[in-house]
Length: 305
Image 1 (cartoon, helix red, strand yellow):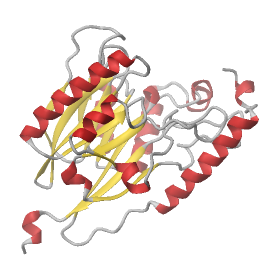
Image 2 (image 1 turned 45 degrees about the vertical axis):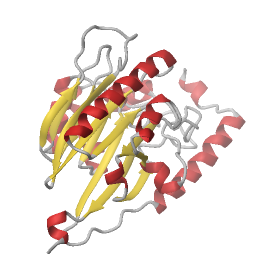
Image 3 (image 1 turned 60 degrees about the vertical axis):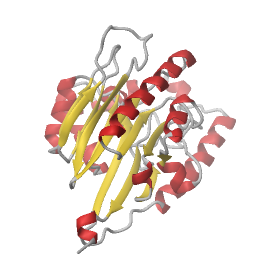
Image 4 (image 1 turned 90 degrees about the vertical axis):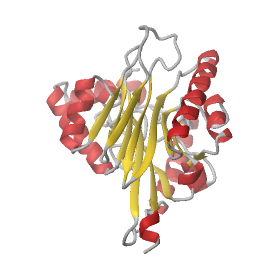
């Protein structure tokens, strides 16, 4: 799409972008984290499809940000630093070198998740990663389950083992989504037998109600944004300005963690949300928006003191 075409939104699409953008902006203001008390463990988690660290719209971002790897790495180090999350699930994250360098810049541990196609991901953690379970790539293909990425890491959060599952589902083939749901179900059953706490997040490429979501709901998982607001909200920018109606990036919490949810939100700050009224030089970090959830709990040992 040309830049000229992007600057001429249709009336209907623009109105939808304005209304959704304003509604989500209100949620951003309201969903503020509560202050943690003494002895309380605080955990902020985030999922973000970063569009290969290129920026969006890609042609404008290329002109403004450039193509030098060092400059883009510095830019996205600042982006993730501003989110200030303890656990990050990244989709479309580029090479293992990119994930490792980003983690090193931020003082975090990293697990690279390979891709059968060209959209690998990663899990970054401020807490120790004690076990890694990336999905192995058996063949190079777009037409296999989790052709983007899938994998899990067991993280020690102040003595509490928590599985972090990062997934990027197929965008349109229902047969592959069904296969992905079976893989997720089998994986979760294995993981939860080791440790009962889990966070599943990523680009589901689907709204709640689909096969992947059903697997999670059947196992007692709770959609963080839906729990906080009574509904899901858009997680994708619109080329017409503001946000689209697509809610496809999600954070799910296992039942034992859901009760510790403090807040959840889609990040709509400048640089993340495409402006409602945009000019030829405007661009944002990605076509997707980050989803953030914050949890707090008092460790059992501390609660007995």
